[in-house]
Figure 1 (cartoon, rainbow, N blue to C red):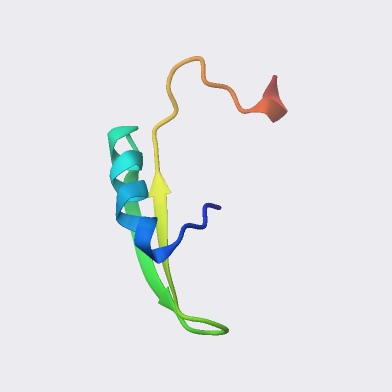
Figure 2 (tube, rainbow, N blue to C red):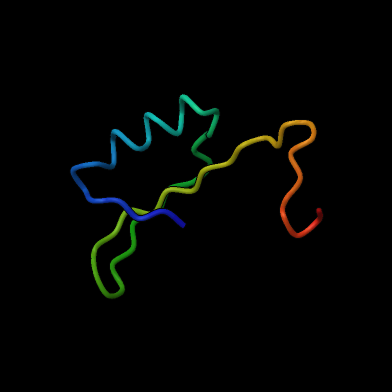
Length: 54
């Protein structure tokens, strides 16, 4: 989970796109406060193993 200020959101999304991340879903949540939730996805590169599996 990554939380950024509204003023930094576009910069962070552009940086993530440069790193190979793709937007897979968006939703607007207003339960406690107004938030835009964006889900990103990235293909795992060969040899990239999660720490739990090392």
